[in-house]
Structure formats: C-alpha cells, structure tokens
Length: 354
Picture: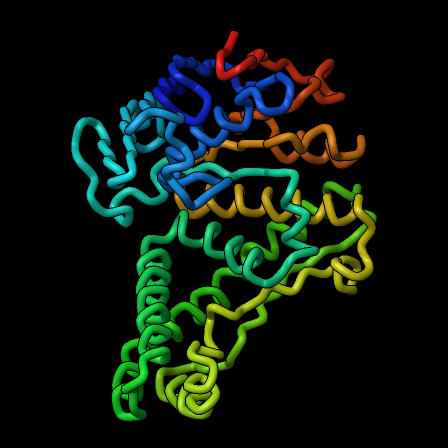
C-alpha cells in the first residue's frame, strides 16, 4: 500500500509507502501516530474509527482533506482509491471512477481496528456491542448494510412522528408496516451470522489462554419476532408507551450481545487480563470472519494495544496473525516482542514521518 495524505488532522502533507508486513508508528502522544492509522483505516468504510464528525478530520484552517491510496487486492489486483472530504460531504473515486453509493464499495478493502478502549465492549453499554456486530457484518455483507441503513432510516422517521403533536394511531399503524420488514430481517441476520463469529472468538480465546479458558458470544435480541406480523403486534403493544416518551421503545436498536468467560458474565467476573484477552479474541474473530466471507485479507490496525497485553496473550496474537496479515501498530515505545518481530518503524513528530 502507498498512502498520500493532504490536510488530514495535524498532517499537512505526507507520502507513506508500506512494503513490509509489520509497520510501527512510534512517537509521543499527540504527534499524529493514530491519525496515520485512522487514515489507513478510512479506505475500508470511508469513516473514522474515532469520530463520526468528518469535519474534525480536516486540518485546521483548510477547507478540504484528501487521502490517496494505491493498493493491491487479491481479487482486483492493483487499484487506486481517492477520498476527499469537506464540510459539504465526501467524494470517492475507485480507479478514477466516481462511487456514489457506499453499498457498491463496502467490503472491497477491509480492515479491523484493535484499540485500547475496546475494553468498553465488555464494560460499556449495549450500543457498543451492537456497533461491533454491525461493523463485523455490514463490512462483508452488502445486504446487511442495506437492511441496517433502511432500519435506521425508518427508526429515525418513526421517532420523529412520535414527537409530533398531531399524530394519531392510524398514521403510526400505517408507518409501522414500513419499519417491521427491515427490523425482522435485521434480527434474523444477526441471529444467523453471530454463530460463526462466536465459533471464531471461542477458538481464538482458547489459543490466547493456552487452552485453559473458554469464552462465548451470544445474541440477545430485544424482542423475539419471526415474521412481520409478530413484530407489528409487539409495536402495537408498546404504542402507548412510545407515544408517552416520544421514541421507539422496542426493536433491534436495543439488541445486545452477552459475553461470557468460563460460563460467567465477563463484565462481572473477568479479570482485566481476561477481559483484554476476550476483546482481542473478538477482534481476531472479526478478522477471520471477514476473510472467510469476502476472500480478501483485511489489514490489522492496532492502536496502542500490543504493549498492554501480557506475554502469553501477545504470543497468542502473533500465532493467530501468522505471516498472512499486514499489521499497522502505534505506540510510544516499541512493543516487548520487537526482538522477535521485524518492524518497519516510522518515527512521528508533529505530523511528520521519518
């Protein structure tokens, strides 16, 4: 991969060529290490893993930011991707052809981010775990991506209707037929796909714990509805409450994932080391899941996490990664396995790379 950056965060201009399988961005905090990692990851879903506000990515005082990639992908060969964004929106080109729908592009250049705040997948609220599912599934399945987008659009409109003063039951009943279809599809797809994700995570956690411990992920839907008729009945039962609070109180936007270690809830009974091992296993599961579905090897972006793992979990990480994945990592110091892993090291200082 080759990446050129212009006016991206604190990086005025940079041209980075990544020919090695192990790339490490080394420097003090606030110098631009994670910004580089963020820019690499944006080739996947055209958005940052740190913020949903694209304007925050544009260098202060500039009107537009640009990222230019040259990549080699297993199925497409050599490709060029241009991503420009401003306060007016994004512009994407693939091999000099404009891409107007993310649905056409999703899954072509996958990447998976491992970040230090991944512990919140265990300790935080259900929204983070739903996002993990959506990232894992939408990045490899165009139908999942479209269904999720439809549901979110319908949910936003239903909540807007619930807040209006002149809404009556008949209008809401009519609209509920629109939201029920993507809702049921989303529940079914999450239930179907989490099985393989769980098997991958269980295997990776066994490797990380040297076979001494077990982990599991299980889908916990907010409601059980096998068809639209059943879902419509549940919406009808919750309608009075929805009117009262002005929002939709049931549905897949309230789903959760239950995480267990050795048969007990990870958030309540797992040590910090065990929890770090579990979130790492979840990300490794996302990597192998993505590769199995798309046939494309994802990039691994490790933001300040390798140094936080204990020795045998680091060993398990490298065993899982092997030599097949390209790893981009950041840190204020080289990780402890630097002697056994050959890194190309980029020193980062005030948005400049050497």
